[in-house]
Length: 233
Image (cartoon, rainbow, N blue to C red):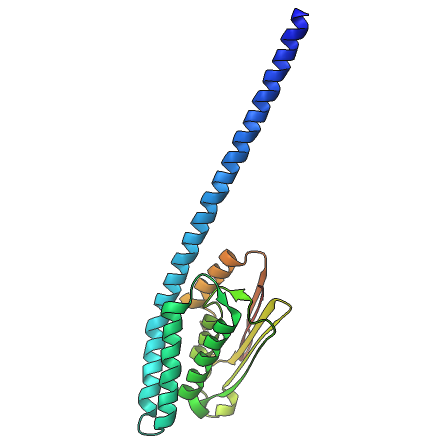
């Protein structure tokens, strides 16, 4: 009986120790997971602030320059462009939080495209199409703009403006967002068309925010630069 009692107590203490060890492991795992999540959120906020800081100076210069050249030539268009420009700045500074509605993000993209269209005028042949099914879907802000900005920045500048092309298609269907951007480029002056801090930055953000739910393909062909991005929202 004494041996039996001793064995029972030993087994009980062993099981109790195992249970306690399992509880501690589980607790530490939850604690580590929470710490990692907090670090992830802080990293994301830092990346977003960095992207905003990077976009603003370049965008401010282009926007002001566009309005300046319209004043006196087409005052109505200058006012319209200035209104669009102020809307974009407001969105960048105050409205683009952690995640925002897809409708707001795509409205921002559309305003940006229209300002660039006004700025470049007949120098380029521009086609764009933006469609979405669910405006309530959420997306991380300022993910799409760097690809579009890159297309305008590196688009070719041939004498024959019809060969300077930019095609932008954005479509959301069934919770999946697809972005396709194609632009012509000048081989001599745009050898590093695929580079730039903007694209590197957004690739990091995609990996951080949509690690297993996005696909990004960037191809540099003979005269065209092509971006193909899909995100499961």
